[in-house]
Length: 111
Image (cartoon, rainbow, N blue to C red; front, side, top):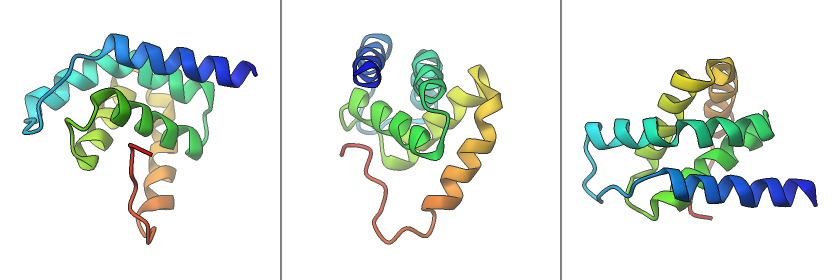
């Protein structure tokens, strides 16, 4: 129950803390979105500091952005947020990338 409440709070924090971007988002928009969502990204990963926790952070960014960024840009947003606010999780990002790089089902942050 506590995890469900924490997840709902984190999801709300993502939506509240991140401005909407555009479908043709450029590097500046990705960087701006990463900066504005870094605290929520790190809070999400801190709540579950595992590879599935990184997946959840990616999904939260994707859902909050509502399709305005590509999957690649969502990964950049999470990476930039982690570098800026919680670099202790960089090894988790590496593990996440290794775990999913050869996945036959592409990562879908909107599921």
